[in-house]
Amino acid sequence: MALILLLPATILIVFIFGFPVSRYLWLSFHASSVITGLDIIPNNGANWFRLISDDRFWRDAFQTFRFASTSVSIEILLAVGIALLLNQNFKYRGIFRALSLLPWALPTTIMALGWKWIFNAPYGPIEQIGRLIGADTFNILSNPSLAWMATVLADVWKTTPFIALILLAGLQTIPIDLYEAFKLEGGSNSQAFFKITVPLLKPYLFLSLLFRLAQAFGVFDLIQIMTGGGPAGSTESLGVYAYLNAMRFLDFGYSATIIFFSFILLVIICLFGWIIGGRVQFLINKQVS
Image (cartoon, rainbow, N blue to C red; front, top):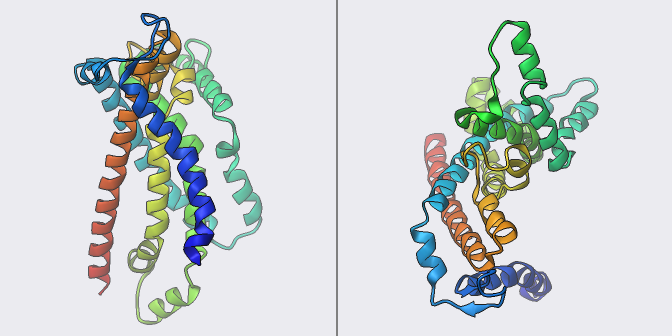
């Protein structure tokens, strides 16, 4: 009976998710560009051979992984602290919870434009403050070593509240009796955190990790607005590269190849995270026992 009830949702998910993926896979074995007059013709896997030898693709893959791993790691660490703080009893707690969601509620386009202005040289606030203290111009978005960090900062600012919200929901499912019993047995707050909070919060941490890895790995609008992939391609993500091939170079076959292979990479990363998460849970359970 349960399987029958799940059948409509399963069919909908398979259609919404499976059709685009299968379409990209099919198109990756075809040429569809200005050279073919935008007609779709088989090319015997030429797109895949091109992808393997495409240095720009592998550079963007590394930059995408660097962006996703750095931003998600920082977000989870910050979100744990914010969730613990918002889970405390204090005056106007509801107002602070609502205000904490404002960065996440803002559209990414507006948020990215705001951060682009903050880092703008020479009129942004950071440059203005630098001149007041006598520092040279920073040119953050024009510096390959700093521009990607600026995009990470913007992403952390926007999406940390999303993870904090998930973790806050997880914290509220933990019975307060567990902490009271633990303290009666002489346990400290730090011990309660690692032996009660972290193990019981682990499913929510893992859920947040998967959500954010998928979002960060597919980043496009933030990069496109803040840097356009520059300077010198130092912040270009796989999403931006696929967009350029499709919309600027009109090479839809190769763009589909990039997208499908990016999907494969994301699945591998999520599976790796699943394995690591299971190993961490095993070590936590072993320590608790």
